[in-house]
Amino acid sequence: MEDTKRIIEINGVKIEVDLREAKQINSYKIGDSIKVLIKKYGDDYQSCPGVIVGFDDFKDLPTIIISYLLVEYNGSQVKFAYLTEKTKDIQICPLYRTEDVMIDKTRTIEILDKEIATKALELEDAKSKKKYFLENFKKFLDISPETFSHLLNS
Image 1 (cartoon, rainbow, N blue to C red):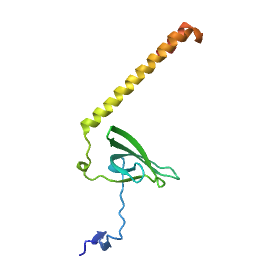
Image 2 (image 1 turned 30 degrees about the vertical axis):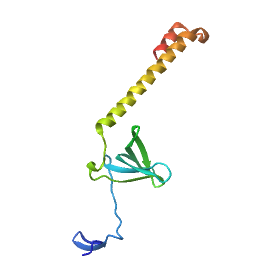
Image 3 (image 1 turned 90 degrees about the horizontal axis):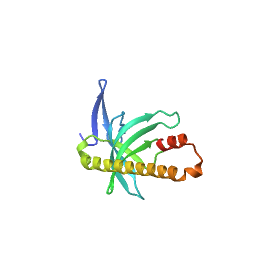
């Protein structure tokens, strides 16, 4: 038999299928590992590892919610994509073999931990600026000591 034809049996009925004309149907469920093809710039695309995290059964535009890891030279980001029939710059396919995806787990966690530390410093800096403002501009704000204390600790 040719490589383009296959015999399949469905409920005892044998059917010869021409694989050149056959349409492959993939079914997905929440938690499935996938590859996500993301359009970058111009005609440039990047394949990223991802996971199906949800389905929104909107009447007019059912949506597959995808979380994927975008690995770039300067770091890694966990991102989300929403795939509908109108989505143009994203494609998905099943990820059958996780060893096909090159993820440096340790490096990715280090990058995410660094981002968390940076954001924590930004938060502390913002709190310091608020404290400075309240302490140095309280004359202009005309607020009671109780309100001042509440604002300082919120």
